[in-house]
Amino acid sequence: MKKRAIDNSLFTGLINDMDMKNPKYKLIYICVLLILCAVCVTTIFPTLWIFMSAFKSTEEFLQIPPTIIPRSFQPHKIVEVWGMLSFGKYLKNSVIIIIGTWICSVVFNGMAGYVFSKVKPLGSNFLFKIIFFTMLMPASMNMIPLYVEFTNFPILGINFTNTYIPLFMMSAISAFDILLFKNFFNSIPTSIVEAARVDGASQPGIFLRIILPLSKPIIVVVSIFAINGAWGNFFWPYMILKKESLQPVAVMLYNMQTQLSADKYMVLMMFSIVPPLVIFFLLSKHIIGGVSIGGVKG
Image 1 (cartoon, helix red, strand yellow):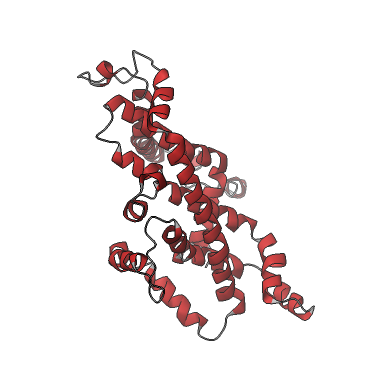
Image 2 (tube, rainbow, N blue to C red; image 1 turned 90 degrees about the vertical axis):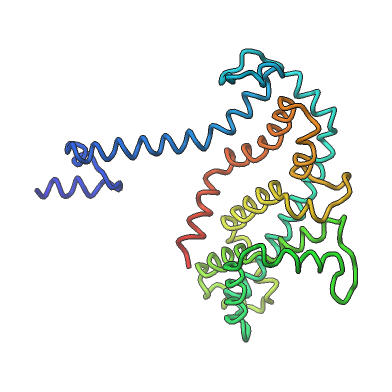
């Protein structure tokens, strides 16, 4: 009995090898595995369908019943669609938005998280509760006030439409990112900050020279969320950027859905899927780590 207890302590799952000898647990294991497989197939199939359909001929794409595995293969449509729509122009606009969003998300939300975690000026707890409360509000509540402000900015009276400034401003004030930074900074010992203060370091110096070098994990996580969010952001670029020369890939996808044949539109959708896929495969470990940082620490 003692040996069995020691062996079972080595297992971290809910069902271990000893439980699998019981038919009841084995049946539960098989059912859970089948459900997970069904969820994975349901999630992955739309993306696979886009990639497979992008290389079909127009006739095969419109064929009823549809073919799962393409019988025809037309890779030349990639070059054709890319050149026909000047996709590189929209890709450049998306990259500009991503870079600006990333910088604002990391710098401003990082500084806010540091202030709430380590500096803690008078009234900071009350302000943080207000910021946290905004996460509970429906996003639709602030759409009209924000749009009015961007078209006629208070005090300055500037119209920020057809500029990327509103997109950068919204990313610079993210309650979720501030919460992530604050929770991570809470894990950094306060004694390090106090020692730096005794040595005469200023608050900006402490943040730049001590806190940021220790915060690479959370910076990577926030960067991933910011880049992915900026790439898929459709609503605000569509509302703010009326000039076609400034529009990103997400808006271009919406505008082209009635101007291209179905098979060529699939090629366009494939272009938009590739960058997030590359980011996920390269940084999947950090993305999963970001869920842990946001959900466990507090």
